[in-house]
Length: 97
Image (cartoon, rainbow, N blue to C red):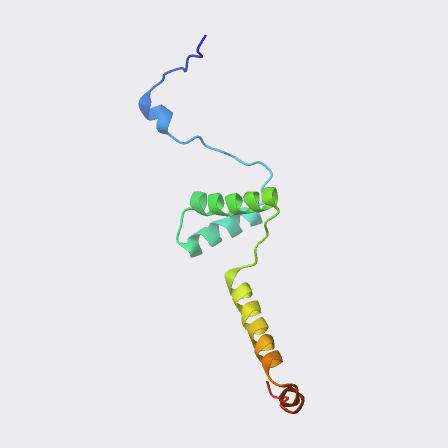
């Protein structure tokens, strides 16, 4: 027997459900409000983005470094490889880089 889905008002069915989180400290709420304002998005959009990113990272164990950190690390590794590719005697006497 197929399950019947209750049909209600079409406008009500499409309306997002309010979600309240109890136990959030006032200073956390203020910080979220300010972060959303600085990002130029609504509190809901900002919270959704951050919660989704953190939840996926927690579930997958994938804690990627921010792009600028990765770029800095890549640049440092490139400098090291370039230095190692020079002849030994040059590395020995060229201390500047």
